[in-house]
Image (cartoon, rainbow, N blue to C red):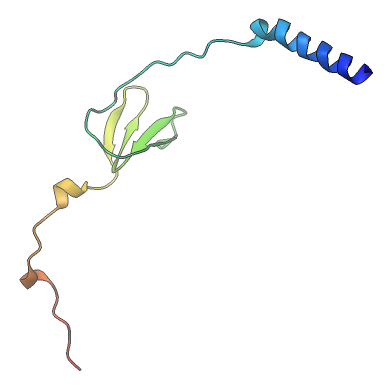
Amino acid sequence: MKTKCTFLLVLLGLLVGMPAWAKEVRFKKVVVDKTFRAEGVAVGDINRDGKIDVLAGDVWYAAPDWKMHEIRLSVSTTARKVTASALPTSRRM
């Protein structure tokens, strides 16, 4: 019985005190690029300036102005048509 009373008092204390420590989380949407780059992103301080940068696909965006930097040439800019004659032939032994 004493355990139930203690549990109820703790629960009541949490419920009464909840508005004091529960804060609304707010987000600000920032579109850094309208081009689809990847399904997901990674974040980290790429240029070691103390600000969190965003990596997506073949590019990364430097905070706070979100200037785009290429990591490597994207597939769309390096794609070329491969024909059968361009493929290496196998060696006969």
